[in-house]
Figure: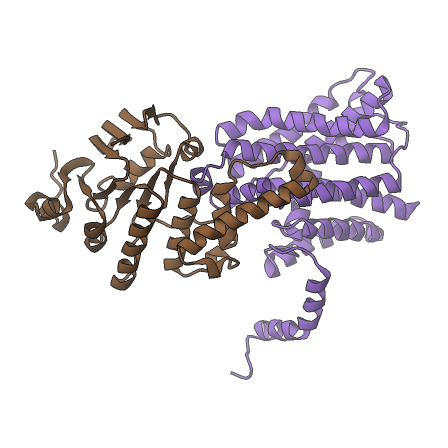
Length: 258
Length: 302
């Protein structure tokens, strides 16, 4: 199986704080991998380093054989890594449909002159993109909200919109940062079914950060547990979640002072 | 003749403000120095026309292009280094001042420093001004509704997400800066060939501030809003001339009132349409009632 992502000895520092400490991991094509750990373990920082928002102090990140270090986020996105955000980051004043159109034309598909002159070819191109965006909205079950202002949608639908937008970027690797945050049990179950369907239909490789174990367990093939920036355990969900070390990290133990 | 003069002034203000609307309203970057681009456009057009014999329309275009090029030169290092918000606005203010001072001190027989250039042939006519303005507004309308414009909006509303969705932030900001500079350059050139006299002091910071104020009055995420605002404010200032300096007080008060009661500007996030205007007047009585209740603090006797 093809290796999609290979991270080795990654270290990230913010001033004196080591947010990620010598972390290595990998994902193969088609895998569904979970990253768990208590708050402040460095999970989101890890995502940020993959997408180019944070520059690592040392270590290497290889995506399909190319290093991601030093690449800007828009370039990384075009290489096929897409993500959602823990604190929702939709475009609030745009319509739902326009939100999903953005990744489809982040590199405009026509030149400046057709745009300025309002040529028919440009209009047709816009129409094509709107149709494609709509297909993503429908896949996520929010097609009927296409003309709503995105900022006015309820929380759960905004999360779905973020996933639709991330899919529209045509990713190979999808990073989901706490997609179930703030959802109740029913909504979590719905989300699990949805993610299963997307993973299967879009032939994606997915990396998921989540605290809800009933989302993690049915979805993930493998888990990485981070604690205080370092790798604590790696393995199948069943084994990892019953590991006493992991339980202790989650249920709390005083942070050891060196 | 007087009316013509007012209309041409409106045209130049509309062009500048529409240019600024792209940068500030759509892309979300404030600039306090766009008069600098007007100045560059005006001087380039006039000098190339007088000394190189470049025909009028081509001179206008050249003025716009030079302003755009200068925008590119000033924009690349600032945007590359992620200068944003207030810092970018102040940087642009510095740029506007620098342009004015450089020209002020170029005391050679061609540029004539602070004396300014007089006896410029009046080549701008009412119709050429109207036509050029209409064309530029039409182009801008298409631009902001195209993929380019949507990307600008995305950058304004959620920069981190826009970048993560593949939008090249630096490039998008640079395009909108260059286009807005181009618009201001054309406006400056158009004005120069109408008033027949330019000096660096025609393009002070006050002018830049006026553009920004007009834009905010009109509504930042709209093209028709700023067009309307530029027309209304220019006309108002002209017809209040008999009040001498007091008109500036009224001008200031107008902004205070707008910021207090309609912070999103005249049009806000919408565009002007006749159907919308009809609806507005139909709903006006209900709205006024609402305002009266808000002011008196009472709602239906409670």
